[in-house]
Image 1 (cartoon, helix red, strand yellow):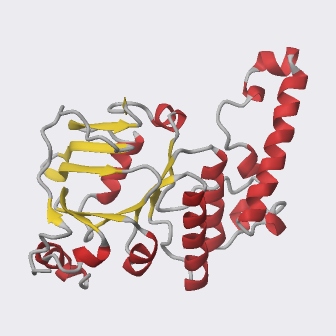
Image 2 (cartoon, rainbow, N blue to C red):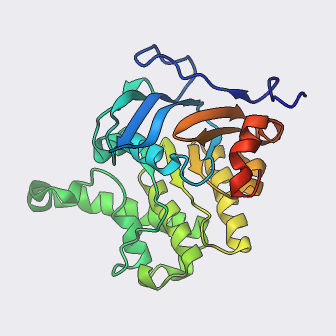
Length: 277
């Protein structure tokens, strides 16, 4: 392959905002723009994530990756552009509306409910629980109690799958950093997502737990969940990701496999100040 990476990864030209999303995309990000004053945090970012894949969003520090995830998840609103998920336009939707569509995110810093037990953290994660409505509590106790039993059974199963069963009665705030990462991923699973946005899921954890989290992501993909993760650990990205999107200066620079991207001069140049790729 030549040094310009033309056979695999390529320089991406953003599609025209408002164009029809390309076929096969579970998530289509089309010409996103978000400026903070004079800072162009995201400046014409476009890419597509296919269903059943693990994809990574990578780039040097300040490339706009986390801002892009915040735009997709509804934590920020875009100045321009469009976000389409499973054929539905999510542009401008609030985070809870987006989660209800099956697009669930995690954060760079774990956001566990520290004063609740690990089990309780999972029990509160499913959406639209019957017990949240006063009328159900007063007049349909059998309904919400049966649902709560189901959530309890599922929570214990998920804790076992993530190796946290022994910690179920511990306060979530007492967990190690790596265990909190596992807990956050387990909580996201309890929301029954179709797709998970993971913002640096491997940050700050030891190599053994890094491998465990990566294994869980692969296992969940096999169970039908699609992934987009922001990640700096390029070794893990190369190991588990089917597709990689590179951002630089707020825009999509290139897409492809890690093997292709390593041969792309524009990508290598963008990473030079951050230690190479």
